[in-house]
Length: 304
Ligand SMILES: [Zn+2]
Ligand SMILES: [Zn+2]
Image (tube, rainbow, N blue to C red):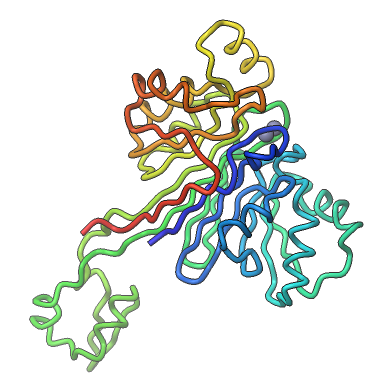
């Protein structure tokens, strides 16, 4: 199960009624956070989700609305007596940027391991999750991320019995390892069925629409994407194009093309006070769209 919370839905600046876009995902006692703008820790606190235990923090790009909350978050984690190391993944120079911000948070009771993304796509296997960064198209280097949880196939009891494999070795085979008994080797694929559908969440902000985003969003149970502007006029479209953002309709078109299960829009311009006003028009393109709301949550579960 993946436990998901969109901590904020704003772009550019936090507002009294709208925090900046950031995502928290919990799985099996581990926590992943994507982006940390100003005041993100307050939204996590309002949600009651502990940020003390964040294992991996992924930064999309170095614009203030996505990273300026980091020193405060690190200090709060330190004050909560965290001692386990923290992994931070981000674009080129992530270590330099974070260390510059840490001039005001120099002493922390935990270490930070940095992973600098190289190239246009990179995958990291951490804590049983597959985290993938993919380059998007913003006015500075920026990455989208997908978080995937794989699901193994079913264990074939009949096959294991037919092969006379003692029950106490079944678990080993279920874990993908091999067993050698009386000179005979049994491999996992002899008793395990095809991998089943896992879970996938894709997060993308800030960017123009791209083919690479569509490709990476494919197979997502949930696609969280920026929809900075909602007016359906030429002016909004030009603004999105020039500032390297996208409109809600462009996000919906990508969701449709990628065939995702559900779309959550986020990163609204401060000029949009009622993003919900655009929902009908968005749903004409992609029916299963939701206008993101601060601290909206969802539990993604494996299919039966
Ligand atoms: Zn932004
Ligand atoms: Zn930006």
